[in-house]
Image (cartoon, rainbow, N blue to C red; front, side, top):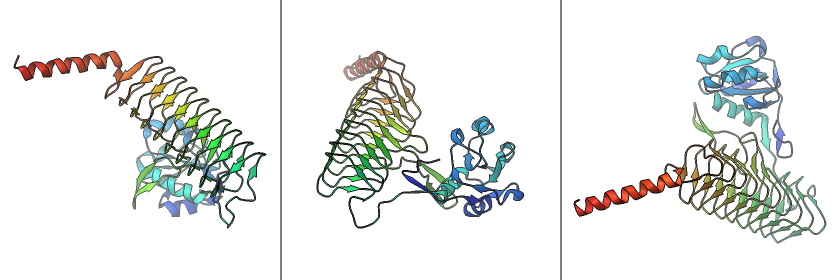
Length: 338
């Protein structure tokens, strides 16, 4: 279930209500009064949750899952295991999004006071003018929060941190000695969308951001919260300005990322990895411990530990340099007519 510090549970609701809300067909009408408390992805589904299956290759995961109900397509309607009620729809992921919006709601900071009376500030916290701190937020001793920063409901920030001006932090747990420079945004929804009957719909992002001790996050960088699991930034990692880290990314310890690096969703980065400026990594790629990605490289497949890759598409850097040299010689020969 989503972290209650950041999300309110609006359930339970009956399967009949979810079927009506999403336009899905309830495969077993006798289960119409069965109650569901939340949504979950396959890996974390339980008997009081509803999940979705949009790709048959994950059918085995549905069999292992203990979901109480599942949205799936008409061709997959028989894949629901015993005890799991099928809701049949041509757009399972969009139906899941609608169910998530019905069952969970992000907590909000309402009222006239900028610093909520329900926030907890330890000794020596300094709040510059214009700071907003939401209910249930916790800020550790000797942490400084710059002008016009917004600390959302339930956020926890450790001790001896520096939060720069105009920073926004939500849905996040931040360790000690973390520096977040001006204008950075932590915990906004990651990019998730699905086609539905009414067009493209946003998929609610119900995870968190975990920032471990000693991390630095540069000015105007963005770190998205997880879609359901967490986005994690490992201890002592240093992130430059204008870096984008998408949902469900896991960054190891002591990594460095130069400006304009872009990390797509669900990438796993090992300890000590380094990224040059404007490097980009496609989704679901693994970057090994100590690997290096050269400036402006575009990586579309796994990088083994300790290797250095460059170019687009990314490849071992010596091979890429040989290709560049060969092209330069070929172009030169053509220009001279040889």
